Length: 183
Image 1 (cartoon, rainbow, N blue to C red):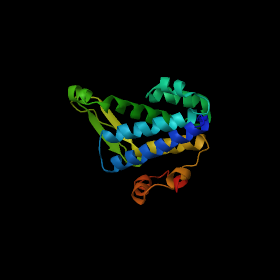
Image 2 (image 1 turned 120 degrees about the vertical axis):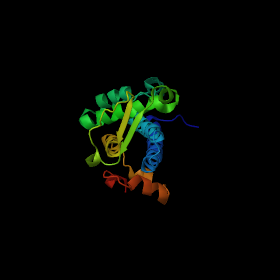
Image 3 (image 1 turned 90 degrees about the vertical axis):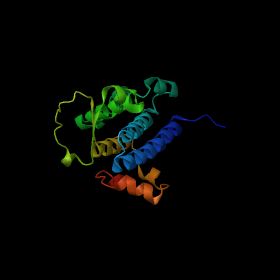
Image 4 (image 1 turned 45 degrees about the vertical axis):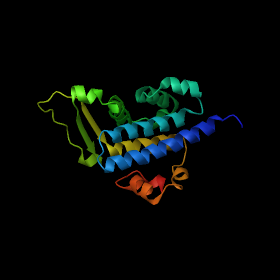
């Protein structure tokens, strides 16, 4: 068997990103909080690692771990024209969900979780009387981020959607204002 090339790794990471993205969007559309945050975190992690595969070894990517801020910094250095303030805020919002991978944090501290499908529906969060961590995610921002990462690395999302089932495509395209390049 031949040794995988950086482009092989890029395509494998991109395929994983699309699968996590579809699963995360399905969880979001079904309001499965906090699972949607974990799945979308993985989707963005895999997309960022796909973008880094041409210039990072597998051991370098493993060293970056699951930290979206570290991966984002590496991505921003490699693709500075693709960086936006909205993307950076989305990275930070998604990274917070990594804390919820295990239930101990929620059980000990509680959590205020909110999902907004479209940015136009987002409101300024109110600070209630409870002093609990907040986890707020705008799905449209994640859609835009994923599309931006694929665009930056000149990788067509259509390549990865051909093998999706009709129901997976429905989950991908539903309420997705950034799906034009995916169809």
